[in-house]
Every structure is written in C-alpha cells, then in structure tokens.
Length: 111
Length: 329
Image 1: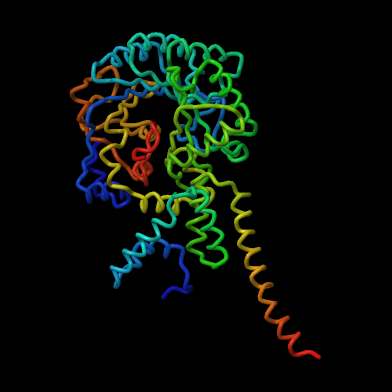
Image 2: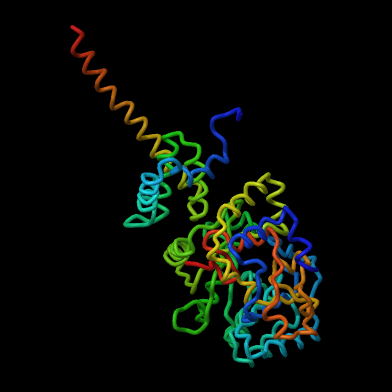
C-alpha cells in the first residue's frame, strides 16, 4: 500500500480516468482538449490560466503538468509567477469580499 | 555490431515499442541527406551538447575523407548535404569543402552556432555562405536571453542576435531572397519542447518585434539523452523522469518519418552512422552494410537496418524530432 495519497506517477494515469465510465470519460477528454487548445486565446495564454487555476485548486498533478507545459512553450519563470499572483490575488479578494457578509451582520446586530 | 543480440535486452524499451507497432526492424528507405560531421572542435561548450564539443577537441575530417564525401554527395539519389560539427567554421578546409559541394547544385546546409562568425578569424564565412547560397541552421535554444545563456554561456544570446543582424543585412532570413536562415530551439532543462508553430510565433514576436530580426523557420529539437545532456540529467536527478516523459510521449505516427530512415551520417574519420546521435555512441551502421565512406555502396546502405537504442525515444516523442525540427507540425 502506498504511503501517500498523491504519487507523481499518478499523473500518467490521467488518460485512463474514463475507465468504468468510458462514454462520459470520452466526452470529458473531448471537452478538455477543446477548452485547453489554442483558440481566440493562444496556447501560452491558456497554459498560464491553467497554471493559475491549478495552484489555486492545490492540484499537484495540474501544477506539474502546466508548469512543464509553460516551460515547453517558452513561458518565462517571471510570467508564470505573475500568473500565480493573479490566482493568489483572486483568492485574497474572494476572501475579503466575503467579509461583506460579516460586516452586514455586525451592522445588523450592533446597537 | 548486430541488433539481434540486443533485442532481448530488457533495457531496450524502444525496440519493444517498435515491435508493438510492427516497425521492428526499422529500415532505411533511401539516402536523401548526407550529413557530414567534420569536426568536434567548438568555441563553446554548451551544457546540452550531445557531441561534447569544445575548444579542446581535436577531431577533424581529413581532406582525403572530404574528397570521398564529395564524390558520394554526387550520388543522384542524395538531394541534401548537411555539414555539422562541432563548429564547422573551425575546420580549416570548410571553405574549400563548401565550394566543391556548391558546384553539385544540391541543397547545402551548414549548422552553425552563428556567433563564431563574429570572431575575426571566421568573419569571412558571413560572405562565403551567402556567395555559395548555403542554407544556415543556427542554434538559439531559447528566445529568453537568461535561459539561453544558461545553456551556452554568458553573453552568447546577445552575440547570436548580433550575428543574425549581420546575416539579415546580407539578406539571410529575408523572405524571397533565396538565402535561408533557420533557428534551432531546444529546451533549457529536463522537459520537452512545445508545439513548433507556437514557439516559432514566440521567437518571431521577440526577435522580430523587439529586435527587428528575421529568420525563415524555427526547428524544435528534443534533447537526446546522451553526451553532456545525459550528464546533466544524471547530475540533476532528472534522468528517470525524463526517460519516462519521452516514453510516455512515444508517437507511433512519427516512426515512418524519423530522420535516420533517409539520412546517412559520416563521422570525422569517415565512419558511417544512422544519425549524429549514434555517431557519438560509436554505434556504426550494421547488418553488414559498409561502415566507412571509402566503401560507400548506395544499394547496400539505402535499405539497411537502423541501429536503435533507448535514446531513440527522443526522435519519436510527441510531434517527433529531427535535425529538420518537428516531424509532424
């Protein structure tokens, strides 16, 4: 039995996640390929978006995959870090925006 | 050396993959490109160099061997002569060789690090190449200066840009001029290159828009795990991950168009190989085909069995890789 839930080689299993449910699996991969391939946005831009989402979602597989993809596409280390900061800022902003709920309750409850 | 002995070698996963897709033994389908590695001397010592070229290397092709290569280059079926090294400009007979080969009126390629042409002793090649309509393939691992310099040495990026500028002034890389200048990208680290078209667009954006430089095509090469690059993979603890990445990226569709099927590589001493990588591993052509340029025999070499090993995964990964860039674009 593995000692950790996340193994680096698990990433290689990604193409097989359609096992036991091949039809939705195939539909997912079709969608995934369309969504992440170059369209109006370039493959570089999409890889940077994916990297930011991967870090926000704390997904080790996606961070591995999209860091490598960004390197492959010639994306600079500074560009990757800027993308991660966008993710971090959105998480911070999202947290602070929810303070509105707290502030509303405070104002409702206090004399 | 016969391949049959190695077929049972469990380490040779490449043979297993070829067998799985019905392509073993892999055979040549002719000789379209004659690639001459005329020297291992170089003014640089790049970290990824599979040749392990450098200023202290002394291997040089003799005039006698060059003369035989010129005779062979005249073979009707051979359309392209591809001169490589090391740094070909550092071979004292390169100019003579170019003039002889240019007379054959075939596609003539020289692979250069470009910046050597800024040195006074080699400046004349800027004009020698243009006068003989030599197609140039120049190394520029990354269009980011810091990354490129990490692989080739501090200040090399700026000097390559300067050399490209001088070549552009002579109409190299200018569409319609007939003087072709291609650049070569290879990853600065233990990862595979992205799609050639996307990287070419990025090179054009940075070199063109920012520096006003032009080139014809970008060739994306996968780093082959031999020579200094293999040393780097071992030193950095990346070897097993890199080999696994190459194997996972194996693309059966590239097998029919791998460069060894149409290339014959000649070493500085006249020995014959399926490719420049096998040359560095001393893996000469096999199956009883002549293994020296003195014994060149088109009929016997054109359908020879290719010597394959695990490093061949570099040429079949993803879009494939060759001295002419990606195989599938």
